[in-house]
Each structure stands twice: as structure tokens, then as C-alpha cells.
Amino acid sequence: MVAPGDDVILWVGLSLIPGLGGETYRKLLRSFGEPKDIYAAPYAALSDVAGKKIADHIQRGLHQDCVSPLAAWLGDPQNHVVTLADADYPQALLQIPDPPPLLYVKGRRELLNQPALAVVGSRNATPQGLANAESFSRNLSDSGLCIVSGMALGIDAAAHRGGLDGAASSIAVVGTGLDIVYPSRNHALAHELAQHGTLISEFPLGTQGIAHNFPRRNRIICGLALGCLVVEAAIRSGSLITARLAAEQGREVFAIPGSIHSPVSKGCHALIKQGAKLVECANDILDELKWVSPQPLAAANAGLAPKNGSQSLLDALGFDPAGIDELATRSGLTSDTVCAMLLQLELEGQIACLPGGLYQQITQLR
Image (tube, rainbow, N blue to C red; front, top):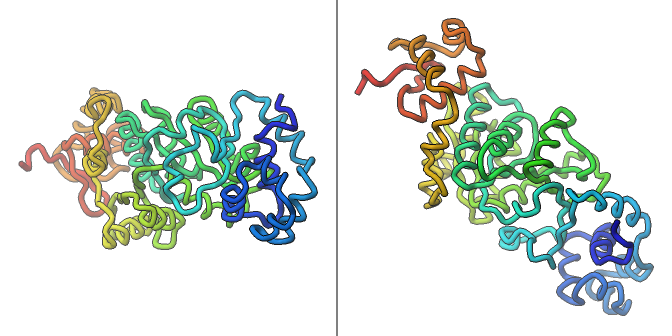
């Protein structure tokens, strides 16, 4: 168990002072040093830096209500608090304008400084969008890029699954305290991330899923990453906020195009018009980042779908255009399986996506 006098308790105790935001916290650190020095500073000096109300709170000493629940939470070896003073604080976050003074971390702490790519998109994703998010994320993870997303339903969850399936795993940046799973439907995914990946939050334990917390956590999602891939997004979407923040932070922005008739493609098309790089496969991202994979991407791609399964789907497709539902009927496969196989065949250059959600073999068209 963590003793109440440990430095991490002081870091957290200071962060719980009402009205003390990240900017003021960093000012105090620059002025006085670590939290133990801030608690020992003269009232007048504290007031000059942070104002009288915050100085009053600091002078009263550590907020004891935080000690017991935090100490109990830290008693689990999976759980950590990483502060700006720690060597393994994410170095990428030091490049953004407002890095959080501390992060609550659950899972593999070493992933915090792994090269990463953010993958975000619609909660109301299409089957093709989910297949794209999972396949791209798996390929990128196998290429050595940890997949960062927000653990929302839809594209985020699919991205995490793909990242966990790959070699470099996945990080979820959540908008609640780490003792709460939100949304509850992602409970199994959160457990898998805690075991094999990482969950992080800047919000104290017990923080519920308040709406304004989620746009705030988006700056951390893209701040951890070399770039941000938007898979599907409506024109008014939180994913576009993440993409804008990524551009402001100097990160690369990528977008997958879709049907001109689909509402969840309009956000991606808007980003492409604004200068985001249009991507059709994971290699487009790796090339733009000038990323050297630890293993050939083709080797990762080879494991996505059994060869005989892909061939059976090609046989069902023939050489005339067909849609997903028709292919599912012909092949006896589920629509989700057909979507995943079609994506893989498209990445391999064996089929093309046509307007209207139709697919056609392109071997004979060359």
C-alpha cells in the first residue's frame, strides 16, 4: 500500500483543489518545484502565483479525503500515477501546449512512450467503417505503432481491437476516472486493455462520464501520437475536433474516403478538402510518416483472413459488381466477415470498391 506521505499522494492532492487547473498547477511547479515544496511555500508567494482562494486551500494542507481511496487503488500493481516529474511521463505530451500535470494509468506503463498513431471516428459506424478501423489498426500495430483512441463505441472500439491484435498494442484515453468503465458496453474491452494494453485518464478517480470531459481528453489522444487517422465521421463530430487539435499540435492528419451519399463520410471528405491526406491502405500512412516497420507489413496482412476464405469470397463475387448483402447470401458468411474480407482483398489490390457500395474484381480490368 502507498503511505499517505508519498509524493504521488501530494501530486494528486494538489490536483484536487477546487479551481486549480492544469495551467495554474504548472505555474506553481515552475515557481516552487514539486508539490511538497508548493505545500511548504509562504502564503504571500502562493497568492501571487495562484490567487488567494487556491493559496488558502494549499495552506490548509493535503486534502485527506483523497488519501484512502487513492492508496487502495494504487495497491493494485496494474495501477499507477505518472507525473510530470517521472521519467516515463509521455514525452510526446510535453510538446503540446497544455500537458496534464499527472496521468492515472492502468495497464502497461511502458506503452506511454511507444510511437503511436491515433485512430478515431463515428460512434454510429457502418460495418465497412468498423472493418476498416480494425484492419488498419491491426496493420499499423504490427508495423510498430501503438494505436491510441478514446474507447467510445463504434470506430474507437474497433481501433482498440485491431491494435490489441497487433504487435504494438493499444492505449485508451478515457473521459472518466479509471475506476469507472464508460460506456459500460465496453467493459470487456476495458478489461482486455488493462491486461494487454493501457488505459489512461487525467481525471480523478470517481469522475463520471460528463459530456465536456470528452472533448478535453481528445487533445491527449492526438498528443500521444505521430498522427491521427479519421475513419468515419459526420460533419459535426468529436472526431473532427480531434483532427483539428492534431493539426494544431503539428501532427499529421489522415482520412479514409467513403461514399458521397454516406453521412459518416462527409467529415472525412471535409478533412481531405482541408489538406488531410487521403489514405486507402495502411502503407499510405507509413509512407507519409516515413516509418520503418520492425517487420514487413505484408507479413502482418497475410494473417488477416484465411486464404481459402478469401478465395471463396472471390468465387462468390465473380467478375460482375455485387454488394455486401448479396455476397453474404452467396457465400454463406456473415456481413461482418464479408466486410473484413473485402477490405483485405481491396488492400491486396484484388478488388475495387465502386459507387453505390458495390465491389468488383479488378484482375481482368488491367
